[in-house]
Amino acid sequence: MNQIINQLIIGLRNGSIYALVALGYTMVYGIIKLINFAHGDFIMVGAYMIYTFAVIAHLPIVLSIVLAIFTVVILGILTEKIAYKPLRESPSITALITAIAVSLLLENVFELIFTSNAKTPSKILDLPPITIGSFSIDSVSVITFALAIVTIIALTLFVKKTTIGTAMRAVSENKDASKLMGININKIITITFAIGTLLAGIAALMYYTEYPQIKPYLGSELGLYAFVAAVVGGIGVIHGACIGGFLIGIIKVLPSIFHIDSVYADIFLFGLLIIILIFKPNGLFGKKVGEKV
Image 1 (cartoon, one colour):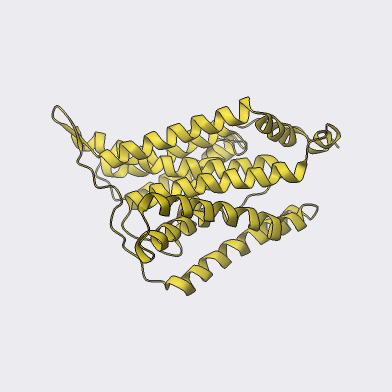
Image 2: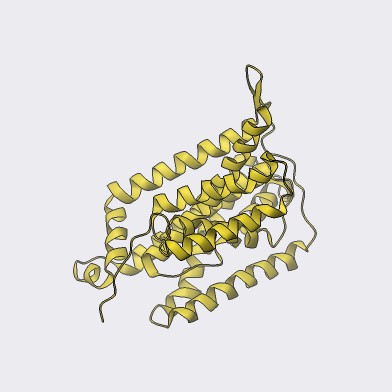
C-alpha cells in the first residue's frame, strides 16, 4: 500500500508539471487559436537558466530561480513579438510551422551552448520524507503538487476576477467585438504569452527540483504529454487542462503500480487520446462551437 500511495504521489507530481504546461498551451490557444509547440521548450530554457545562475554563476538559489523565470517570461514575450505577431493574419498552418521552427531553434541553440550531454545539478531541495504512521511520502513531491494547486487557483482567480482577466476572456470569445469595446488586443496577447511562459518557468522549477538531468530536448517530451493533457481536458478550457494534466500523470504511473512494463503506459495513454478524440473531439470539458457559413 505504501508503494501504491507513493506512485500516486509521483503521478500527481508529474501531473502538476503537465498541468502547468497544458495551461500555457490552452491560454495561448484560447486567445489567438495557436498551438504553440515551442511552449515545452520554455521549460528546458528555464531549467538551464536555473543551472546557469545557480551552478555556473554561483548566485543564491532564490535569486537564481527569480532570474530564470524572468528570463523565460522575457523570451516568451520576444518570441510572440518577433515570430508570431507578424503571422496573425496568416493561415493557421503557417503559424503552426513557425511554432515548430521556434521549438527546433531553441533546442539546437541550447545544444550548441551546453552540448547534448546531460547536466546533473544537485537537488535544490533535499528534505526528509513525510512519515504518517507506517506510510512514508516524498516531501518534495508534496510541495510540487501544492505549488501547482496554488498556481492554478491564483490563475483562475486572475482570469475570473481581474479587469485584465475579463479582457482576456472577451478576446477569447470575440476578438473583433473586443476591439470595438476598446480592448487593446496586442496588449492582451502579450500578457497571455507572459503568463503562459511564467507557468512554464514555474514548471521548470518543479522539473529542476525533481529530476537529476537537464538536456536540450527535455521540453519536447514534456510538451508532448502536456499537449495530450490539454487536448484530453479540452484545449482552451483552464480546468480541463488542469484535470487533463493530473490524469496523464496518474496514467503514466499505473504500470508501476500493477508491475507492468512501463512501455505500456504510453500505449494506453495515446490509445486513450484516440478514443477521446473519436467520441469527444472537443475533449472532456471542451465546448462544441458551431461555425457560421
